[in-house]
Image 1: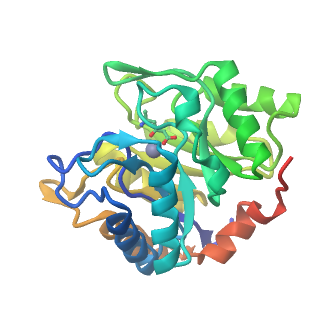
Image 2 (image 1 turned 90 degrees about the horizontal axis):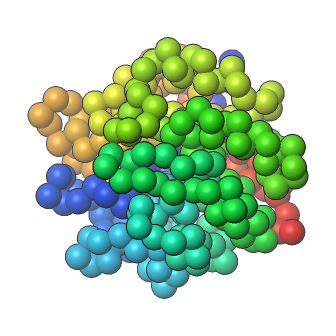
Length: 276
Ligand code: KMH
Ligand code: ZN
């Protein structure tokens, strides 16, 4: 098991609003400040969604351009764009900013219930996103909300739509999808092709317990206000950075080493992908 640990901070998401935690960053400058704090706390990458000034989600290219510029002006943290956006967005809207060439971007390989909504990702939609990622040489983080999404990713790998090595993020605990059961994580990792890397994102109160389990299993970790707004029961996190800090502290106790962005790039093979 490698001691190297990539911590990703999911700093805002599309759904978490300031009414739930006043520290959710909306503007590019707020996101950049938060990203720098996360980097200082031990994160190597942020996962980010666009927001309008009123907090409503957007995948607008200009908004992502401002985010990328602002974040890169303040730190060397890697930037992963969401291609999931919000549940009502169409696929073209979700991927219109990818020509900005973020360090990484997400790819959800299936449709799933998302609370009372449906997060739609048909096979043609997945292929459209994958092909745009490949056009710009961006490696995907495969978001797994349900187990069949692994099978679909493997089929796409066999078809040559995706290329190895794959990086998976298991999102556990979205209402209507796979629950945040620790034993699921034990099983899910057995399904990955060798050479894959993985992280876990536990939703709500499951975030830190699943993160700590991943540390013990040798996986990577995603935490942040997109997934959970609390540091402890009844205590709001002051920002995603505080959750990152908690994971980094526990990691060091367990002999895991939060890596810098440059090392994360190597671990995730981000340098080895060429635009198609
Ligand atoms: N907001 C969710 C509907 C992603 O960022 O790629 C989708 C999501 C996944 O957050
Ligand atoms: Zn997201």
